[in-house]
Image 1: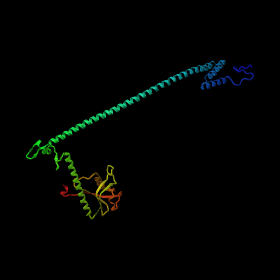
Image 2: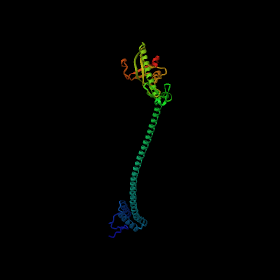
Image 3: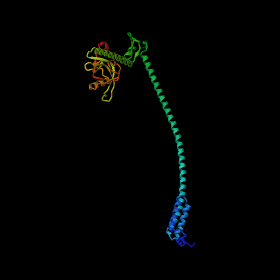
Image 4: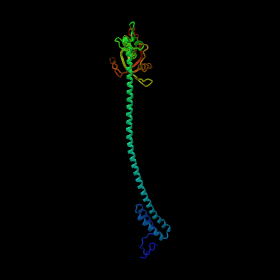
Length: 332
């Protein structure tokens, strides 16, 4: 066969009908595809053939460029190898860092245990110190109490220790005048605090007795009033209208009567003295009625006999306060 495929001399038509540009383009495609899938030796061989064709055609610039691809591939291979080596070094370095981190965590765990133990020790120390201080205070108070008892014993001591003058017991006089300690019928002494407590208790009982007597006087008066009907005593009510603070405090009405003229209710609050104040609940109820908002929810079953059940609303038109005058015997 005398064809010259390099110079496209194909007189017999046996060579394929395509030029060298197509052939070199195909080699470029083979080189790129092989290089992209890692077949670098095939890519280099295709590029080398392309270089030979370019030289034979006199395209030295294209030959040089394609030759640089082969050299570049070699350099790239070296660079990739170096990168792989560097990656291995980095991986080793990361492993070492992780190992150091594990050691640090272990150390921190030990430090945490030490701090916990120290905290427990400090807590025990504080408890011991507090116990010691408490014990010392308790001992001091006990000693002071003992000394006080000894002093009182000496003041109350036998008559022969303090002596007598004209039948007067100086120890008794000293107790009553200087130490404010009194004696009852049994000879028992009382401190000022005990005396004050007993006085308050007696005052409370007297006030309670006066209140009961005043309440009964009001009851008797209301029962004898032909214009009003007494329907209940000591009835718990809750206002339907809130006060200025948005509250609805309950109150306990001493007496509730119904005005026979209009069928509306009247509350009577009884006091045994003009100085006795209204409670906060009583004052709030009086203010509500005065404003004309006297609607109260009944919170008691005591009014069933008069047709009012627990939970019903009672309309109150007046809130009256009676000051009952007690006789002298009741005030003592």
